[in-house]
Length: 362
Ligand code: TXA
Ligand code: MG
Image (cartoon, rainbow, N blue to C red; front, side, top):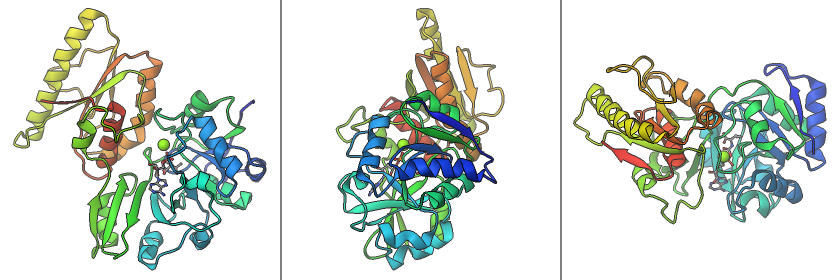
């Protein structure tokens, strides 16, 4: 299959390009499109055969459910039971990077929810995504448009690198703005607690401000869990570059930030020296925004995603950086840990998963 790449103006997408993509969706085909978080791989969420196509193209395990995308919050009852408890959250964050897990309706096939009696729903905040959903006339199921296990795509080129020849088309609306996926939450029956299933574009702080009377329970994989190598719960790798990535963090809470960073860099430099002697291709991922104390780090590829106090910039650049290590043939990567404040929580969640259990405390 030839994959058609069509450039669209992200603010005012061309109607004809959208109509052609929508026609593919209506006929049960697959089209990748930009959202404000990452690129998604879309199919008609109500068409079981189309949704099976998503799993095939990605090589995604069939027990991992998809997010259903709507153009209008008013369409929620088509796919989910709109619990009154979540209405204020939907009002506050839609369109935007918040995904709500709700009881599903009978219209949603098992393929989309992986057999669960709940469905994940969001309204993306991107003119191209919204125009495509509207023109298709159906809710669109869309996981991130990468081969399963790989870093998510934040550009159309990333999508093509993974899926060229496997999908009908890609709408190229330029780079994604946020760079990490939506926050996935479930509100419990009492309405008193938000379960955070995946940290993402909406921060815990923002959720707290929107629902001050609710507790936020972080049910996403903790750093401690992520550090346990290949535990049975971590069935699949996620977001992973081809090189072996290790997160290096300072486990001493008493260390001040500058001292902690020095310890991390010292440990990374030591590792690099040993690897250089063996001729291994090395990479380093930093959150510094300038030359670190002690001079440049000596590795084949050093990428700095900006200062640790600007996690939005790190989020925007993270997945492209992981893919650059692949392009350079990097075999071993060390990533400095950054503070888990704001969207930094999502950045570290993805890095721990990319590390697949390789974490070094210094
Ligand atoms: O930002 C995003 O959310 C992007 C863009 C394309 O919208 N999509 C995305 O989809 O990240 P995906 O498939 O890569 O991740 C969906 C996440 C998975 O962690 C999945 O397990 C979870 O949502 N999920 C989906 N349905 C669920 C459900 N019924 N209950 C709990 N988790 C669910
Ligand atoms: Mg994904």
